Image 1 (tube, rainbow, N blue to C red):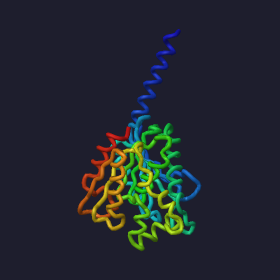
Image 2: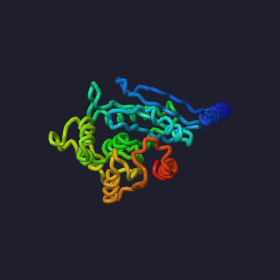
Image 3: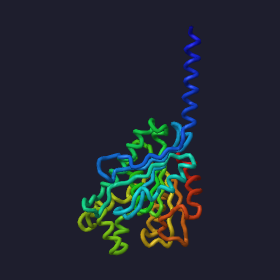
Image 4: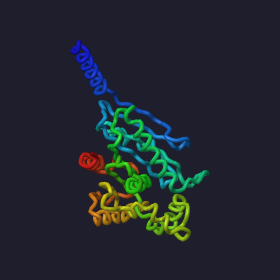
Length: 275
């Protein structure tokens, strides 16, 4: 009488395991993580996923005032096909009719990550093995979030592709840069000097900062190469694990899939640091 239930339970366990291991890849697009039309996320789940499947959260660029999560769909699928769950996030933009300024976009990224974490059991992926990866303005948001809001330690590493790191320095680059930064921050440095430290990832580097992978082209006229180089110097100063991949002849590349070695560099980095 005692053996039969045990055998039945064992059989259920095997069936459950079989069902999990045979899960198909799945696309879940335009999921709402908030009530604003811009608070949406696309989810790409890999086949054969399980509770240890790692997630890469992608943050699009566009000078904080443009861009869309769909622009990173191909990149999301590239990593999904390598076994990662991927989430591509939209966030509220600056210089619109509603004029969302800092910290709106960072708050949105925070809520999107919480949404993904809360869905982890339903989607059958890990709820705390995350990497943030952002392009340009998205790189800035990814770095700033990881250095300032990762209080639950879900983000294990961050990857920035040509992301601004010092917004006061970027503001002073040119009048065009100053205008874009002001639209995002909401104030000039003359009006509020302190907030420019608050919005700059470089201000928050400390010994416990997460491993950081940076990509940047030396010919970048949109986000100067010095932005990533300065962050690397600061990370080295605090003995934080980091790597800056420099492209001598590239500028501000929007399509990272064509950047030489980008995917393989990310794969090697994630294998070592996303755990």
